Length: 163
Image 1 (cartoon, helix red, strand yellow):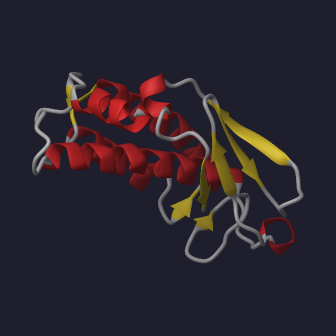
Image 2 (image 1 turned 90 degrees about the vertical axis):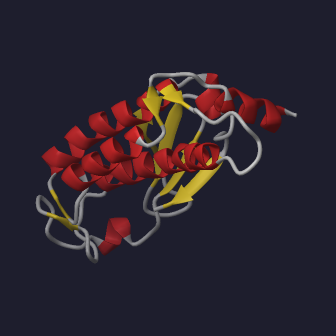
Image 3 (image 1 turned 60 degrees about the vertical axis):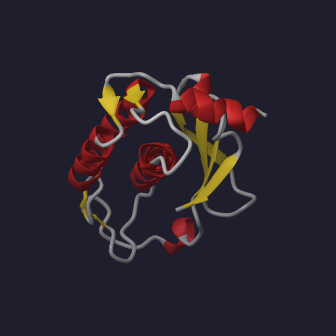
């Protein structure tokens, strides 16, 4: 029943931003601050900007309240999921102090296989996002503390993302 309650809360959300407005801002932030060629400064600034985009979802408005062929609701749910991934990407990119593959970190031009030959794993809980680096037994480094409304986190508890 919790899932249906969460769906209804989102379906009847009546904020000031349409679902179509938020992805444009999100795309601009990602292209400007987490592009292929990155610097520590742009990634650091990007973390704050992507947090603003994620927070803006609290003010989303779903105009179509129907349950049949509701593309507005589908797009809102897709955006809800996508925002978690872009935040993970931005924070993980900033934490990774190396250049790897097509992601060139201009402040760290070399690969660092000793420290970064592993995945970055992110757990998202009610108020924090943590990243485990190096190996599955290495230390967990908290890279982001955030407070979001229950509506945002209700469907996100315990998610794990590999970046």
